[in-house]
Length: 111
Image (cartoon, rainbow, N blue to C red; front, side, top):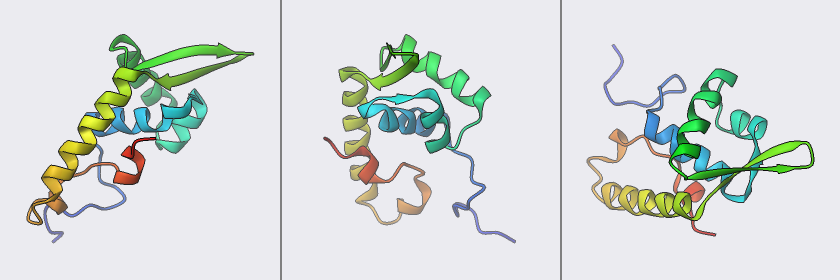
């Protein structure tokens, strides 16, 4: 029997973690395919999440030549910073560390 709260490669990410990961990847701007591959998402999945971030004004899309580039907005960066702070506070308690499924802190680092 597998112990509870053990992360494996098949562990599903929750919606918030996927949104945060997309914002992290798009900090410097990225086309949809790069976001899709780096976030390990399907085409259908990326097409579900990008509109949510665009409607929330956490992400913008700009046309550069023939490519659409997605980039985290100032509001999106602020969300990443708050999420990073919250994750650090939660992870201060060693008892909870293995229960939190969050992107690695290096992804959330301020640039």
